[in-house]
Length: 514
Image 1 (tube, rainbow, N blue to C red):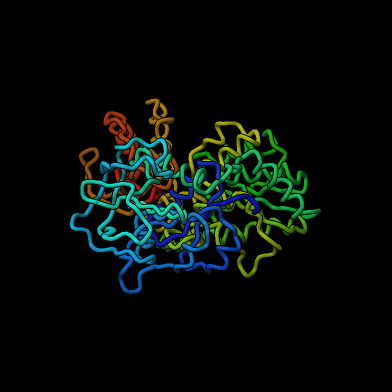
Image 2: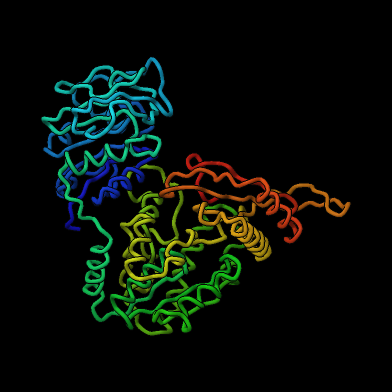
C-alpha cells in the first residue's frame, strides 16, 4: 500500500484494535504491529506517525516488553499511551514507579491547551485512567502538559522531537475529547492529509484485483453475511463472469437463512454471481460429532469449508483463486497482527491448507474494520438492509452451541433465536441493539412443566450495544420484553426449560460465547 499511514506498536494492550480504528476515523490508514517487529521494517514502511499501546506489565520489570531508544530518534512523531507513555519515559531516561494511588475509571484531567496535542480541547475534561504505575520523573527535554488530582504527569511532551506521552486512554469513548486528541496528533503533528476513503478503496481494489486475476477463474466463499457479500459483489465488479460464488449451507445457519441467502444472491436475485448452493449439513455434523472444544470446532469448520470449495472447483473446472471475506479484526484476533494473545481462531484466517488446489487466496477486505466494510458495501450499491445486517460468525451456530454440536441442538437454538429476534422486532428495538442472538448453553437443569419434573437445556440471550464491536456493553432490554421472550421459548421450543440473559460486557467477555 502506497498511502500515508500511522502504525500502532502493540505491547499487549487490550485496546490495540480500538486505537487503529480511531486513527482511521481521522481518514488515515493504520495497521498494528508487535513490539518485536524489526526496526528496519518499521523504517521501510515510512510511517507518518507511531503510536505505542498500553500493556499488562511494568515497563521496568524483568523481561517486560520494550523497544530501542532508536525508535524515538527516527524523526517520526511518536505518541505513547498508558504503558507506551511510561515506556517512552523509561527508555529515554525518566523514572517510572508504582503509583501511590492507583487510578482507574473516569477521571477529571486538567490540560495545557497551548500544547498542539490539546488544541481545541477544554482545559478541564474527563479521561479514562487505568494504571498502577506512574511517571515519577520525566525524561530530559519533556514537560508535563496534563495533570489529575493523583497523577502529576497525565501527559508530557517534547515537541522539538515530536514525542508525546499520555497516561490515560484517548481511544476509549469514556475519554470525552479522546477523538480530538488523536486527530490533533495524526492530522496536525504527524501532518497526515487524510486520504483514506472508501470510494478510492473500491476503485483501487477493483483495478488491483483485475491485474492479479488476469484471465484466471475465481471461486468466492459466500455465506450471505456482510463481509462475504461485500467481497462477492466487489469481485463481481472486478472480474464479472470469471467469478463463481459457492454458498455452503453447513446446517449451522439461523432459521430459514439458507433460503434467504439464495433468494438474494441466487438466480432469482439481483446479482450475476454464478451462484451455487451446496447442502453439506450432514457432512459438517459428522465432522463435529463428539467435539466440544471451541477452537477445535472452529478449525474443523474452516477446514471443511476449504474441502467443499475444492470439490466445487473441480466440478466447474480449473479455478485459480479463492476469495474470502476476511476482515482486519479477524486477523488481529487470530494472533497475526500485534502482540495481544490469540482470542479465537477465525475459519478464514491462516492461509491455505496443505492439500488446497488454489494458487492463492484473495482477501479484498483484509485491511478493513467492520464499519469500513459497510461503507464499501454502500459504495458498491448493495442495499442498506443487507449492508447493515448484524454480524454472523463464519462457524455459525457451531459457536453459539456450547459443547458438542448435534442436529437437535441446532434446531433448539434456531427456534429460540427466531423467537428472540421476532420479539425484539415487535418491540421496535431492532435498530437500537447492534447485535443480539440466542445461544444454547451446555447446562441442563431441573424444572417443572405441567406438574412434571423436567431436566432440560438453558438458553442464554445476548444483546449488545457497540460502536466498533471491539468494546461492547449489554443492552438494557425492558423486562417485559425479556419476560415475553422467555415465556415463548420455554413454551414453544422443546427441551428448553430455562432462559438466561447475559449482561457481560466486552471486555472481559467476547460478544460471541465461544
